[in-house]
Image 1 (tube, one colour):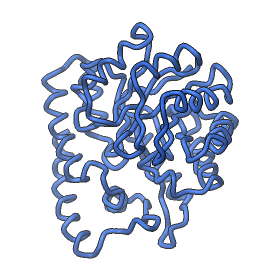
Image 2 (cartoon, one colour):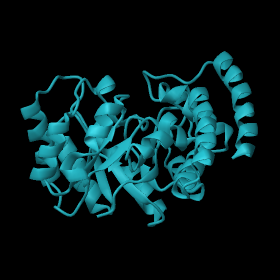
Image 3 (cartoon, helix red, strand yellow):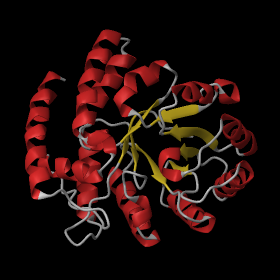
Length: 300
């Protein structure tokens, strides 16, 4: 089973001025990321405005990315949704179209207890074949639900295709505890791309990074330096990557991602309401920051 690793890019979903999914933009972005050297693609998650998309939109975006990738990168489709039935439908679809695996966020908004979470994940994991890998996804600051270390262990015991977790919260003690689950035979991917290099030393297999959707270069360089055991260079590059994270507002507003991609020549387009594009004043100020990032790229 292919697992996530290295620079796994959380992709935006390109849209046109009417808020409709732009499949040509999806193809362009997919090719851009692969050509820049990212290891894996992770579309239709938080960065991809997942819950704003219809089931059919999510399916066609997934299909487009798989068809465009043509095996050049590992692709995990995020399938979490507001109901178990819909999540299962999207999970089965991801396997049918040739994805390498899926991610499943916890149920969102409504509180779920440990028993309910376990039942949810077991049902989804069992809806696909046991050799089709699954990552659980915890982002409690957005979802209102978290995944305990004990629950991850239960899931890996009950479902052999659950291979790891994507964790997008800044509890690094818990991150280390996740890495010990299943006797250490677990894949931990972290969403804090601002601390990519330190997280690798902590035992994470990589980052699932929204910032790398716009500027993959610093993250690809960090991972290369780390794998070459050039820790001083990895540290230098990580400091550069942190600047990109700061300018891109750490992924708190995807309008910055999409505007920056347009600056780089990628037709990422617009936001889907109620989210809005940047105002003219915001965009003017942001473009000045992007010009500085263009110069910073030369130091990588």
